[in-house]
Amino acid sequence: MNNLTPGPLARWLTGPRFSALPAPAALPAPRLSFEFFPPKTDKLEEQLWACIRRLEPLGPRFVSVTYGAGGSTQERTHATVARLVSETSLTPAAHLTCVGATRDEVDEVARRYWAAGVRHIVALRGDPPAGAAEYVPHPGGYAQAEDLVRGLKRIGDFEISVGAYPETHPAALSADADLDFLKRKIDAGATRAITQYFFDAEVFLRFIDRCHAKGINVPIVPGILPVSNFQQVVKFSAMCGASVPAWMGQLFEGLEEDAETRRMVAAVVAAEQVRLLQANGVDEFHFYTLNRPDLTYAIAHILGARPRKA
Ligand SMILES: Cc1cc2nc3c(=O)[nH]c(=O)nc-3n(C[C@H](O)[C@H](O)[C@H](O)COP(=O)(O)OP(=O)(O)OC[C@H]3O[C@@H](n4cnc5c(N)ncnc54)[C@H](O)[C@@H]3O)c2cc1C
Image (tube, rainbow, N blue to C red; front, side, top):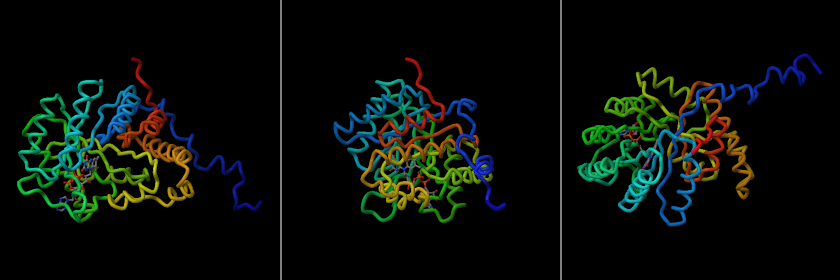
């Protein structure tokens, strides 16, 4: 062995290792939130409620339900949120978007939420409806999330979370202009930003630095996507501007037909991501559960979350 190549012991002592990160028990308990989508069929409804019941004992700060364009999807969001209020100990947050509705219609939805006891809204612009190339505000509607935040605050003293983009929203003129938009949503009354998912912890930590430099001081909560279907994530990421690192492609390579191994790999990828964030001072995490509890539960457990005794 020559002097330039470290021997096994030198490599072991100086090399990176997972267990060198502080043990979760030495850190503050993580604050969690879980995102669900409203089910379209009875079977999916069952799956959603099994997921909710499995994650409920972890005592999340809130659980949120996404909102799609179109009447029936919106009714499903409302029904899911209403059931969360009446049948669980959880605090729901309803997503609401500006797409395809006048201000009066959106305000009416918000009033219904307020009347149902919902006090937290995730206020979003929304994506263009299927088939439309770009977002066009509805005539007479809220143009973008900032306007929606202002409108909601006129209706009730909602707690409002908004979206944020560590790798910049695809429609943004520049990364800096994107941060200006985020700042405007905060100045309009939002008190938390939840990020688009990302896979490299560094991407998020750099983003937080840039937010602080802009004077954005509300909590910026990382959106964690446990990957169960890698090919789908690659497709979706191309649309929403999240990058998929090459190392992830290598980890999932050859597992297209092997869902079980994929899930194990996904758990390792997400566990390392959240532990790196946690070791760097992040103590709040939002999980895109995709209505499947297992990966989220395992990763929350690794972060130090434990079920509350009934
Ligand atoms: C946590 C989270 C949850 C989500 N949940 C849902 C959901 O339930 N339903 C759904 O349909 N979508 C959802 N989305 C997706 C979201 O609707 C899209 O990302 C949408 O394209 C932008 O929404 P926004 O609220 O961030 O928009 P905004 O903050 O209004 O705009 C986003 C960015 O677009 C650019 N932009 C906007 N308007 C202009 C303008 N006039 N001129 C120049 N640039 C402009 C800016 O860079 C701005 O930062 C979610 C996203 C996140 C991060």
